[in-house]
Image 1 (cartoon, chains in turn cyan, red):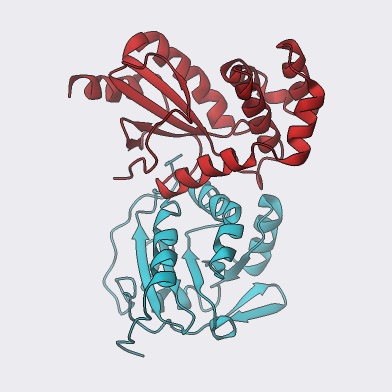
Image 2 (image 1 turned 90 degrees about the vertical axis):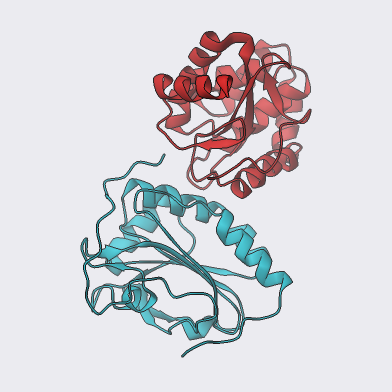
Length: 180
Length: 175
């Protein structure tokens, strides 16, 4: 269902990265809470592909549908050796309740304080609404972004783009970094 | 725009005339409440367009959210293997609030099928390959939730309700 309580807000001009980091960029490292007392860094996952899904809010209808689909696809993502991480500005406690309610089996990371700091570095923050954009990144085993995509807030992007990117990763040589 | 990546074939559950001018494909989950509502919308569309519409149902069970979705899909596939897919499909949606083994068994028995064979199919995953194939084809086609509809191969992104879907089908009829 492509319905949402989020409209497409016009971005305000400030110093945050407006566009999603493109393919070939080194994925900025981060350290975020995955549970109320455990942190996870991107660098810990080096050696295998990572799928980052930034999303506006726990409990919202489109985000729930999108993450439920990805949760269902975890075995498929594992076939590529890929780890899925969800990121929003909700707190670790909120994530914990949401994940338990929806039976999610992947980590939801709290980009909570400073609010949206990681999303800003990825070009995945909506400063008007104060939430993450609906943004997808596929990162290769060396830590390079190989595919990124921003979906309109109200549109669930599905998983076909992710799978195409993972296919490309499995079949193609690694990208060359363009910046650090 | 998202398009259907796996063409409609003899492997699909099809309802309607083979000479229909428009094909409507649904990716559905028997436990999804929105699919339960869309079931009646499809019935009305079939009534409205009759021989002009070919309806195809593909499985898209979101089992981590819906614990009875796979059992229901297997029940329909088992019935389908005996030529009774649509009978089971309809009864599952019309009794969506009672999904579970007693209902699956009752559907089998009502149509003269073996509850033991159904039980074996559920235990041994007899139809999982077909269901998974439907699901994977859906994901590759951009299915982003259920129900997902494709009208002549193009994903329908509106609300699954009669007036809007009729309009889209009519547009396909004249194009």
